[in-house]
Length: 498
Image 1 (cartoon, rainbow, N blue to C red):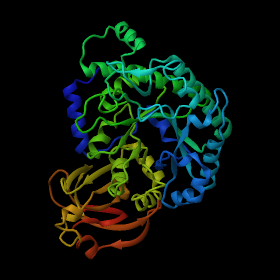
Image 2: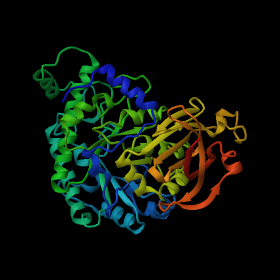
Image 3: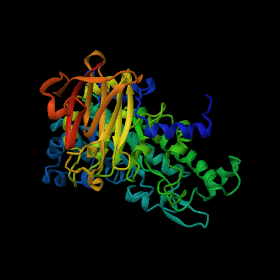
Image 4: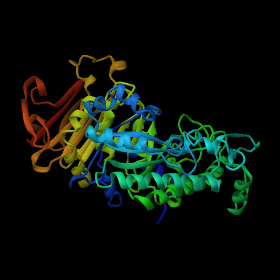
């Protein structure tokens, strides 16, 4: 396959970050749309805090499952801890997994399980005690150039890999036996935010032999990072392969981003980062998705980097913030994302609750139109208050509601937050707008004549049942479609040219 030149690739990414044009699901990712009862499935998710799933009494005492369901979730991302399922070497206890299955089913929720295995946020803190007691002897730790070590298992430790593969395969075998007929578990995350801290690559004896064998030379840290990425990918890929041999369901790895101008080793080096995606895809073919954990500013840029023809976008973690109420519309619309999942949902209020409740009425329709390439997304804020998107013969100019003079935060840009539309082209039926804090005006895409509003209906669910006909003040006497600041809504627009 011909490689895209670096400059062209950069331009494509830059344009993707600001464009509102649709993304069509790729055929090699259609299986990841998780067919349930004949319908594609979109994940309206949330991830538990790291330690919540370790004790059923903790979750039950807080009524966590019911609250998550009430917040509009259809899927919970929950950790599975290696230290708990294999407390003694070769002896497995899946009671914590069975609790997750029972609880999710009883609340009509799906699960995505997160394998906290060899690495969690770079560190090897979730491996069993019997492994920790063998650090430095039986199990090799990663060394930097000075010979210093941290609690990070080496990617060049075959005994660690063998143990991880065995445990993960046992987990997947248990899931096959306990869940294959029910399908509660949709996907499994392999490890968590893999990456090396303190160095761009390992310098232990085995790592040095591999470095020489691969013909690597020099001290360029980015070349060192590529070397390390190959072996991290091989390790995670081997774990995924062992699991899929027992139960073949979609698997992904999540990414700690290389943000804030840091260098490899300052950020978790050699993980499944966007600039290393080719290496990870080549060396770990059993991993289906590479998915970003977004905690830094610049959400549209990060989503664009991980939304590629060979990599369907899934956001397994995003920092809890009010802007998520808009970002979920943008991710599903602009990038045909298969899911969205704020972190620590059991400890914090969920700003996406109203957005999830609205989206939940339209999910099968959104998924079908994603597959047809007929969903569009826009995101606006105080820094970028307007954007355009062309759909057929209509050009929509979408603006933040704060630009409207009668909006309650007009002129108070520090309060605007983000606004977004998910727009679905329904062909002859019109355009369905889902979103928050946003306004759209229409003109002919060819620049000739005028585009008027034939009708706007506030609608409910896939039947597009009318709640009320919007006109007069609600559409500024036929001038625009508006979902006001701080609210979410679904509106069906029909236009005419004059």
